[in-house]
Amino acid sequence: MTDAGQREATARLADRTRSLERSKIRVMFGLAEGADRDLVRLEVGEPDFGTPDHIIDAAAEAAHDGATQYTENAGIPPLREAISETMARESGVEYDPEQITVKNGAMEALSLSMMALAGPGDEVVVPTPAWPNYVNQVQLAGATPVEVPLPAESGFDLDAERVAGKIGPDTAAVILTSPSNPTGQVYDEEAVSKVAEVAEANDAYVIADEVYGRLTYDDEFRGTASYVDSPENVLTVDSCSKTYAMTGWRLGWLAGPQEVVDAVTSIGESTTACTSAVSQQAALAALTGPQEPVAEMKAAFAERRDFVVEKVAAMPVVSCPRPEGAFYAFLDVTDLPGGSFEIAKRLLRDYGVVTAPGDGFGDAGEGYLRISFANSLDRIEEGLDRIEEMVRAETE
Image (cartoon, rainbow, N blue to C red; front, top):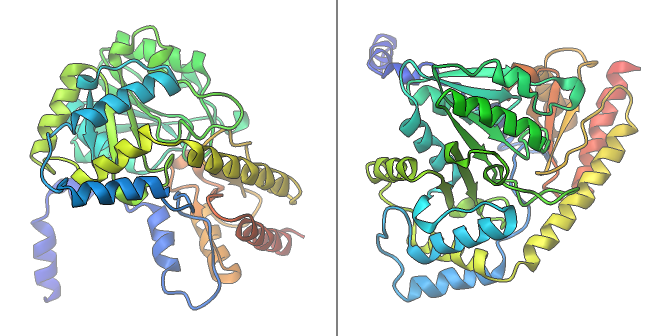
């Protein structure tokens, strides 16, 4: 195609495609692909464990028994019942199975929620640093993302007054991610309740992204809807991906007020119809089967968390908030030359460590690097040794 033809084809694209920015997590992933050297990969948030055998076996057996066809749009009833029971037992959140819709990962649940709740003229409040896809999902829905930088001096904990100050009559929703990606911060319950209260007063929803909720290390996790005064305006998003090492199975769900869940299910009929029947059987086995593999993974992540915190504390000029959940550490590298994306590329090029630049999580993340400790202790240690080598070379 000629340059003129390419420009003409681009001009025919819908406007919504022009404002989307690629996730810098995926940019760094792409830069690392095909490298002919030993790289320490700390950029992607994916458990380094395999899916537990009993889940795989249950899925294979179900497939052989004929679980290979369409299912109900909202998911098979036994799975929705299992999700309801798990949420009540593990996070104190009470939802009837009919208030749950199963989707292709938490990403689809979030995206369809945006389409159901927000449109042109609406705003969606996003405290940052935050997972970058939220902003794109809001824009794809035709709404306007309103980023609210959280204070670094408090470890990026939720500042209720700051967030509440951005909620108004045009606000359709507020997205709260706890534990946080990228900081690992578990938001204070009182602060979350305050934000939810202000959102309700403005007829806005709180979308609680809790995909890391069962990976907390210091205290037991409670779901947002379990402690706010008015759970009727709270939507809970979760998945099997992080808890059960099932990222590739693409199985997540949304739970919330019936009218929103029904709308999301209806929209999903026109996008993917239903989630993979085999993946639903796998999720059913995950939620109802042995939980020892989850405990083992969580214990391993906790050990790695402690190692990372201790190792970073011994470095010159670099620091990080102590992660309370998830499997990320957010390293403050503001004393190194250049912006976070430049630092990440330099670290990859010269030292063979792949990280996620902080500015990819919003302006509040500039000057930080996110590393994932969903890797072996040996590889984490090697990666941190290389990071320290760069820090000392550039600051001493």
